[in-house]
Length: 346
Image (cartoon, rainbow, N blue to C red; front, side):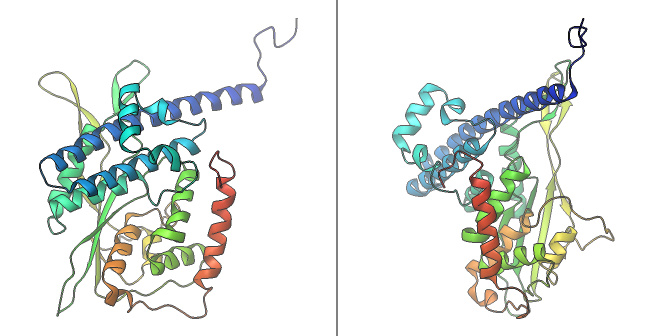
């Protein structure tokens, strides 16, 4: 009798089976996360439009962008996820009638940002940029509603498998003895998988972020000296604790979340070396395992420099470093090669 008939399986076969099982599990989690993100965002934005807290045209624009971003994430997922896999028949029909372009352009046009960055803009628009606790609270309320239970093998809840929420929120501002700007918010890149993050970060460098921020992110990867922002730029970040199920008096599992202040990582210090971080950096030389550009500070500072041109004009850089055009050429090549591995029509 052969070894295979006695129950032995070649390691390569077993490894492939484990890999396929993991892909299947991750796909199911992304389907659930996408479904609940769309449903809760649609309800949230629709209610804001109904009570005149958000202009109808603006609300529809946000929803169109959210659908585009989520459908694109499904497209580049392995295995691929189609809009019909995420939406039930009734909701799919309703959204196709209202946002027909969203069901087409995700195959040929890159979204400018992940869906949670879009949701952040909605929250800041209705709460105001000065009330940081209100922004945090509203994000926590929305996160609690977008809960995908993470289950143990015995079926009990042990956390949250929702994959489309950012773990870090940041805000920044310029302030000196003469004036202070409003607060500008950003979130960390919220999508599961280094491949997906790489695509969104490269796209942000090429088309979305302020040119100086894109330059700083690219320089960090090239190990060159970074840009110098004006010394009166302040930045604060908050880390969101994972949803931990908590047994309540009603004997049911409910997710609990909170933010706590987060000092900058070494990559933030390299990209923005003279920003005043609140809280200040810790004495920690452990390098961040995520790629440059993933942090929430990049989006927040990009918004600051785009909105306050006089602050942007005061950014300095070493003229001996590679040019932005040279660095972006490398980004475009990497983005192109990554997209060719997906069904996206390059």
